[in-house]
Amino acid sequence: MAEYIEKAEIERQKTYLLKLKEQSNNFAIKNGRKPRANTETYGCQQNENDTERIRGILAEAGYEFVDKAEDADLVIYNTCAVRENAEDRVYGRLGILKHIKESKPELTIALCGCMVQQEHIVERIKKVHRHVDLIFGTHALYKLPELLYNTLCSKKMVIDTENSDGKIFEDMPILRDDNSKAWVSIMYGCNNFCSYCIVPYVRGRERSRKPEMILSEIKNLVADGVTEICLLGQNVNSYGKDLDEEIDFSDLLKMVNDIDGVERIRFMTSHPKDFGDKLIDTMATCQKVCHQLHLPFQAGNDRVLAEMNRKYTKEEYLEKIRKVKERIPDISLSTDIIVGFPTETNEEFLDTLDVLRKAEFDSVFSFIYSKREGTPAAKLDFVLTEEEIKKNFDKLLEVQNEISKKKNDAYVGKVFEVLVDGVSKNNDQMLSGRTDTAKIVNFKGDKSLCGKYVKVRVTESHTWSLNGEIVE
Ligand code: 5AD
Ligand code: SF4
Image 1 (cartoon, helix red, strand yellow):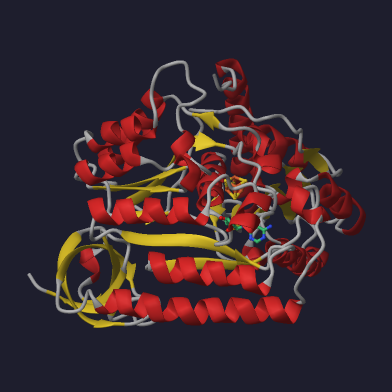
Image 2 (cartoon, protein in one colour):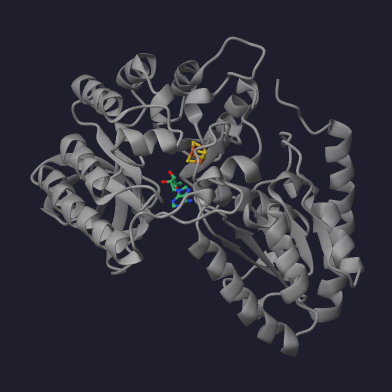
């Protein structure tokens, strides 16, 4: 059974929130404005969801938000550790913040998230980036009120990266940007220890939230106008395994499906080893569950899969894809792939291309392997050179782009219900939204449609998106 942060501790944090609020009021009297915070998120949806919690705490503490670090009194970077380039971007930003802080010494800089849950990173920051004021790990998020208060009252770097297996906390504020869609974490952590991945080390063991907590959060979201829910977890298929009651992810999906006012349900991520018939059946029969599945396969070759500790074979994976397509013919599929796992040969990589061609994913998130200190794969020697790996990566994109375009072509001429997300990024005359199958559709329309469902006929397809026109 997952452990929860005690109520008394949450109440204690709330007393710090009051103290911060008082400080913010004093700040406003002195400066004629509220203190300003800038938050930035690196990495996955789980991190996005954590940042929403951070912003909830800051809003409650009397902060307003700005888009640029230059305009802020407090900067918080919620970092990612999955690949080296995400960490390098943070170091790059820290360099820029150093300059900003030179001309604005009262600026407070905080780092949190997966990257700083690693000891060697904290050591580097302590040595090289002395201008950071606060470092807190993934397990200390609920303590932000106390940690921020202590930071503002002290001249020393405050650090809390205690490496517990993680406890669940409920009943802290959360501030979401989107009014119609929301991420809801159903579980935290990961027990799978894929040999290349740092996540189990920085996010702790799998722990499921109680279903009543999840359902009550969703009901509150619906009351606020949210209609699309994305259930989040590193491996949602393990949901409930650590709970006292008999419940699994399919059962939870059914319960969410029964909530009035919820229109669409998505979820991520599923691990292929635990993805089975019961879930396929639930997806097919629950009307609100979107016909979209993200099922990372990582590599196509059985030897590589075994060395990755993925616990399935290429054929087993393809069989699951066949089953889901048979049961839900309009399913839209996406996956994650790692190219250049240390011992992967060119010949073994061909199996990855074979899976691409057979599964016919709608979209693929592909990554070049990045060595993560402390993981088993970090000890392996590379078979291929960097150039060879890059060549394989480019080949993968070439093969997949053709498939993505073909998949999108099949949408042309048909009408789909689209939830309008907002104004299109590239053209403010256009709106952008998503189909049930998560396809991005751009079309002309009035801003007042944002957050609403409209019927759109697809008129044109591209590799990454569709164009269309409203039909009603
Ligand atoms: N290098 C490259 N990609 C990785 N991922 C996880 N760890 C690594 C790594 N060390 C990818 C996997 C995972 C996604 C979230 O990130 O494909 O599914
Ligand atoms: Fe990492 Fe594997 Fe867990 Fe996903 S399932 S978070 S890839 S260890």
